[in-house]
Amino acid sequence: MPRRNKTNVLVGVLALIALIFLTLPIVALVIRAVANRAWEGAGDSAVWSAIQLSFASTALTVIVTTLFGTPLAYTLARRRFRFKRWVMVVIELPIVLPPAVAGLALLITFGRRGLIGSLLVPFDITLAFTFTAVVMAQTFVAAPFFIRAAQIGFQAVPRELEDAGRVDGADGWTLFRFVTLPLAGRALSTGLILCWARALGEFGATILFAGSLQGRTQTMPLLIYNIIERDIDAAIWTGLLLIGLALIALIIARLIERAPDDV
Amino acid sequence: MWQGRKAVVLLMFLVLNIGVKAQQSETLIVFAASSLANAFEAIAVRFEAENPDIDIIFNFASSSDLAAQLTEGADADVFASANIRQAARAREAGRLGSALTIFAKNRLIIIVPDDNPAAIMSIDGLAYAGVSLVVAAPDVPARIYTDLVLTQLAADPVYGEAYRMAVIANIVSEEQNVRQVAAKIALGEADAGIVYVSDVTPDIADQVMTIAIPDSVNTLANYPIAITNDAAHSERARAFVAFVASGCGQQILQMWNFIPVRRDPICEDNASS
Image (cartoon, rainbow over all chains, first blue to last red; front, side, top):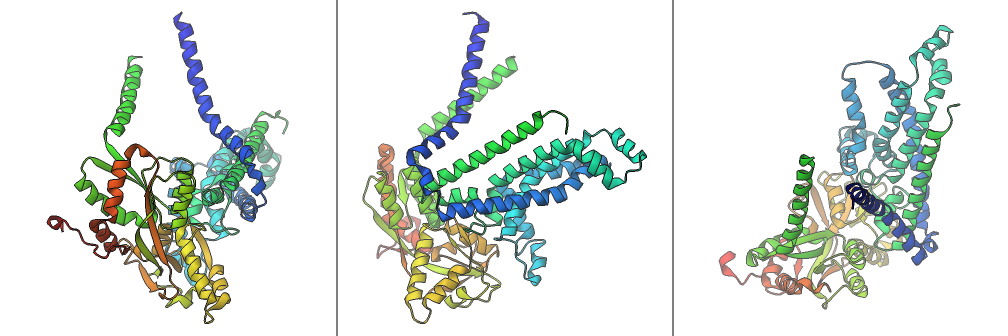
């Protein structure tokens, strides 16, 4: 056998193994769901309240991230300041940080004995174990996905265009609203979708900082962890829903990336 | 090119080496309720000293998690559960290879952070408005025992159903195992938690205050142990189970605030005591 053929076969086999390894678990979950008719437990109140909670919390996470993340991304894209690189590294840290570490850090900051949390106690404000804590945990781990994408998007907007607008007498907000934002829109949307998908899957930081209580802090990933021992069908069904949502998010992100340039 | 090949060879050697090592050592995989963590680790030290060829690997989690893992085919030699229900689940799944032996008992207790922010002085305090209470998740044995206590209190005219409802309304988090409950209270994140007496280990004893649950309403937690049907290590598994039930094992359990089932929880071996 010629050497090149051998190499081709080897590459093919290794690629196939990789492909099977990455897809089989998803396929197995679907097979088990069908075999167990997992959807029959779909009406379970715990599953339903987890779905509601997941959608409500991730919607808030996306809103909060847009509100505070966009100015930060814009600043990072347009301004020069000292230690900017370090700031960028720190902002991106939650992306690679183990979520359990994020949860611990949030607890130490916003918990009742935490840096900020202890200052809130006199006002009778407790963050840990609340819905707010769920949103905070999600925002902490998911916002960097948006900020990074938005920063790259803003950087790609040619300065000349902004300058031209300024010459024509546009003020800062008008410029941002009608020039920068539309041009960076695609990057911002992709970033938001990734941020949402990450928030939807958040587990480690949430369970440490927000705890787990049905209808209050138990999002879909927490429900899976909690219910797997009692009702594996409900866990599988919730898992399938999460896979479906993640798939939709990825497809939308791809479509936005590929769409023609006439934003 | 050579560098790359060397790296690959080295990597494969490492992987193979780990595989061989795992086969050579006489391991014993013990699945145990998280409340048993400290006591079983102490028992393992003693057991391994007496059986130098055996290396114990623990998997501590809530008994309900462990039963689920066993049901899904997890590799284990011994299962020590915090209640009979979860051991029975493993048996129904065909994973147990021996009868259940009750080897220890336990009681529930209320813990509050050392500064007792909600000023809880007795079991009444769990029902105060605004108290944040952390308990174990449904199906975790500690929670089942907790619910039993609450049912007993609800049946008591002094407390009644209103008390039980108020306590349940105060729950802010249901943790996946009882040690997570203890950790949340030790961190001061909630006002009170319900755990086993044995969960107030030296690690957290100075961070929490304990409030007794009266014996009249408290339940006795029964801890069964059994050998799994993974026959590979059944000799070692039997030796471990026997050790847990022996005077030595019972003495260690008692030291960690479990209630022993033997009347004489004393090490017969005088040399080491």
